[in-house]
Picture 1 (tube, rainbow, N blue to C red):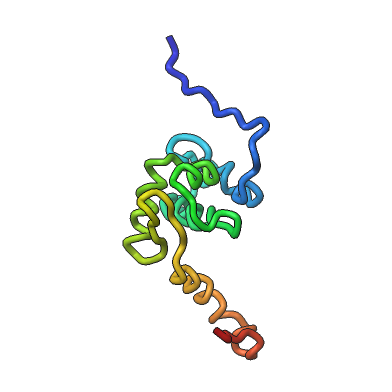
Picture 2: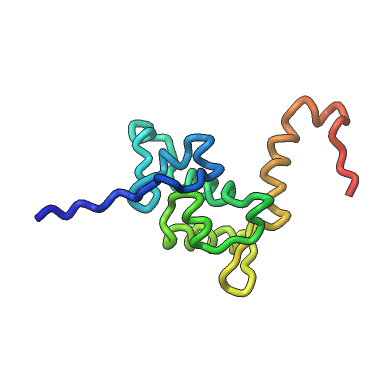
Length: 131
């Protein structure tokens, strides 16, 4: 008797934001970690890719999400999502509401600011914080 895992049916399911970038397809499989496309790249850090996928799962429509919702959007198992969220909460990038719902904190903006501070636009004064 073969012990093959059944494949998840994808017919009729809504495409996640990560599918548009091809990330979800690369993360499908065991623990969201069958990143076969990157298997030959010894410098690729799978855990970082999954952590970024968890951050990217949050959208305007999903500002507060459960572990199950994030797992569905990313294709990463609930157990792994829980660990990534625990780390993000500990580092101040996410917040836990009522023990079940999570949201990103303003600290995540610093990730974008790191990019913007190195672009030519930042030096021209065209982007200004008015808050």
